[in-house]
Amino acid sequence: MSKAFVRETDNDDDEELDAPEVPAVRNYITPSGYRRLKDELLQLLNTERPEVVKTVSWAASNGDRSENGDYIYGKKRLREIDRRIRFLTGRLDLAEVVDPAARQEATEQVFFGATVVYALAEGKQNRVTIVGVDEVDPARGYVSWISPVAAALLKAHVGDQVSLKTPGGTKTLEILDVTYATS
Image (tube, rainbow, N blue to C red; front, side, top):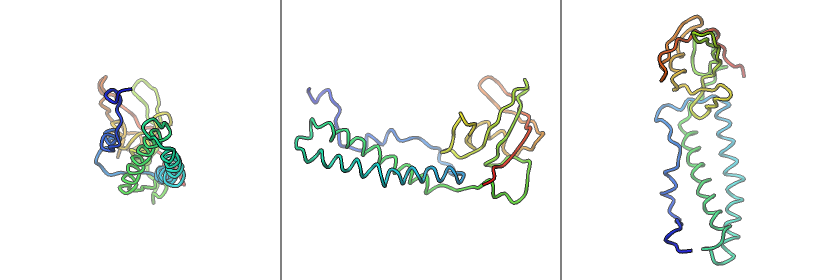
């Protein structure tokens, strides 16, 4: 196949465009979120990257690299791993670990790490936990502290009603319960 129709490059600059965009704000994170990111980084550094390097080295020793699938795929995977390692290292360097279980006093006010139960005006109840940007998991009810719902809830107390601006209009949320996880 003609090289005119195949995009093959060893230039890592093109790969940088695919890096996830994260707002330039403080990187608050819970201890469990920090451990998860750290574990992923160590897995990449100690296990996955050495295995891929070994495969690429073996494939390169086989000769012609232009049609060597193991070599081409291995180099691409190595770039992906290196990009993720750089991303994780940067996020961990900027991380400010906030342990909600270390709160000195019991409070019914919403802060980072709180699990909040709130009711919408139509009576439907929702439960969310306010976590760091790197820990968001909508299926588990984990929302980022910079999300609109968290911004509406932060610093409010049990019994307060807060306004949440949504594309469908403003909604009123009544805070029913605020709890903090224990270690």
